[in-house]
Length: 378
Image 1 (cartoon, one colour):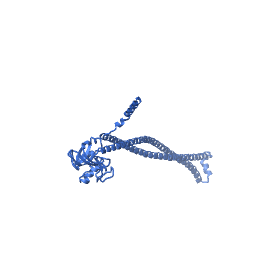
Image 2 (cartoon, helix red, strand yellow):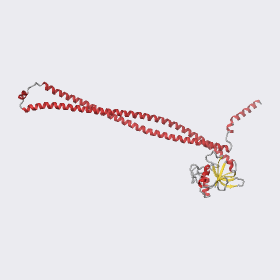
Image 3 (cartoon, rainbow, N blue to C red):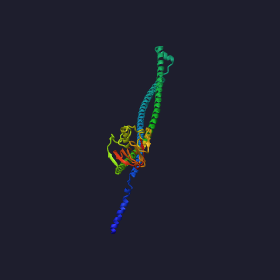
Image 4 (cartoon, rainbow, N blue to C red):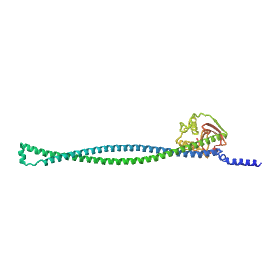
């Protein structure tokens, strides 16, 4: 007996421990609707964060692409500077060779001058009379003197010319050295610039990788929230059908696609598209989405005033009944249906889409207030 009581006690403890999750589960339609509304807020916040992260990734990728372009241009400038430095070096080496050649030529001419002077000084000195007597004619005396003078002049002129050419070459070489130094400074600056851009690119790449990881996390979370939202939606549809008075059938509504813009700028197979089709196609009224992006049922009082229709608390056959709270207060869409019948006790019949998921339904003798705050449009 004690053993039986002990097992019963253990069983009760197990029930107590493992039941809270089920007890906390939203069982009523109102609870499910509120949980759906809370999920809508989370989904929207997560979607906003995901979109912001996608934009950040796009911006970062753009900055990296820009840096890649700048780095490539800088590398090209560095290569160009290197080529210019090589050309300048070649010119400097060529000038150095030419200067060396001129120095050799200068040395040869100096030797020639020294040799000429040596011969002149070593020649026995003769008086003018002796030179005249020793010469065959006066012209021979003049020619000999002119030759020596011409030879000296030619050698001295050649030395001056070579000296000037050498000086010009050295000046040009100095200019090339200055140009080379400037090119090397430019190249060094470009190398530093490239290092800075490489660092920026590495930082941006790290940021991009982090953002891509965060994007994956946001996407995973969004998928989880969307799956949970779909599960809750299925439970809501199930409970709606379980309450009775709901008939799933077919109508003349022509659109079989889901969430595609219809001729009135609402989404097909949604309650708003069915109601817009009903008024335009069956009643000949003009109803369309006057504010794209805000066409959900919860904003239809605004559309009604824009198009000149009445918003009322009194039902009228063929009019809209629109819900927006409290069951729809936190919901981002609301719900709209067509009033098909009005009864003295205040109940109504309605036809609609998407009360049962993406299906046509007809509900009889419903009390609109059971589904939250509402109003009529006609």
